[in-house]
Length: 338
Ligand code: PMV
Image (cartoon, rainbow, N blue to C red; front, side, top):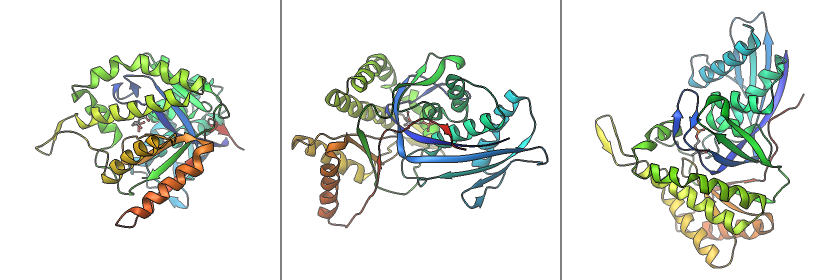
């Protein structure tokens, strides 16, 4: 009745932006990601017939049951309980190796670890595909944290056909993600809101029309370890997603907002720098999720050079900055560790 699971957060190279079904987290397009070695969640779930309600602990802190976080956890456990035909409540203890608000979504690793630990504690025998589908119900991108290494989320619009599978193991390619945390402040518009607003952009349909070709190109660049094609395609992809966000206009509290700007000044400075470093011969590209955090992508042999370029840039600023950097290699999928 007790199991501990670990799962890594993932970084999408071809991104999920827009949903055809918000309840079931079914995306409008497929996506491709990599599990991140230094961003993991470890979760223990212990079912206990004596408990009257689920008890959730995050690190040392007990979480109030009416908090948003607790509600998401209980909702996900209810789905697993229904599958196992049990009403037993559980003690849940969860911990992240990375801070919240650094631009790496903890909901993906969190939901993947929770789902696997609960399924295993209740001795449910599920395939990787079914686990991925189940994790997706908790948080869309969590389905990509179930399989190993480099992952594709296939989505054909139906619940049973929207799941992730591995396209290459974690040792397939020595790619590195340098997560550069340019601010710790919270973003104003969550990714859940961004998904809903995406269709407001006149460029949303153009993005979708190009998606099948993009997914195929990025997938084969990964399989062929073709860094040039890969880098160019993922950088274009990130900018196109943000172009859609920036042109998704909406009205909030009676105020018209022209679009969602997830970037800040530091993000833009770094974008210019990455372009400059490339012109100087350094093979480095960037991608960004729904926030200002930059993900610099390179091959491990160039890591020292990229880190030193970032440091020189930090020191050259008139106002002194020292960004937090998290170095991530490809990682395994969700697994039981007890
Ligand atoms: O899983 P969500 O709702 O946090 O959405 C993720 C959105 C992006 O990070 C921008 C893209 C992606 O595919 O992870």
